[in-house]
Image (cartoon, rainbow, N blue to C red; front, side, top):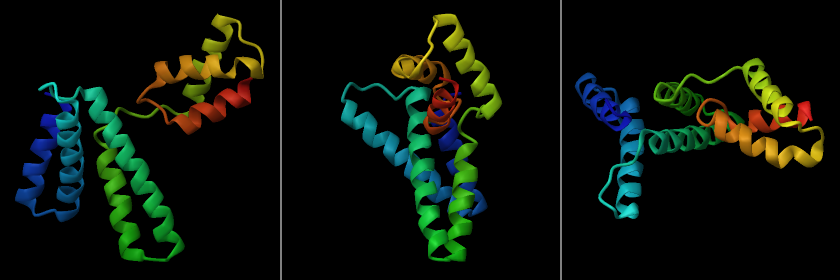
Length: 148
């Protein structure tokens, strides 16, 4: 089952359960998917990887909104945004821990003979392609800087 179909099934379940928060989150993601498919204009559906990028973008935007809500002390909004992040995370692969990311990046550095800050771009390129969807870019960048 594709990720898009999982989202549609979850939308139906949220409608039946009358869960407005989940329904709103799913509809937002599905509308973004539909818009991207129309923009592509090739008649093909987005791949699961492209849909995961949309979900990650939505989570990132929600985290930014959460930060502002916390600054404004809006308790109800904070709870809603935290629930949205928690719900959307279900549609992403399990994120790797910092230690797992360190191990993978260390292997990239050692196997390619990278040694200093001048190789950071090369390491980042390889790490981002290998860890795509499994770890956030900020974490990857932080670990690369630390290890070089």
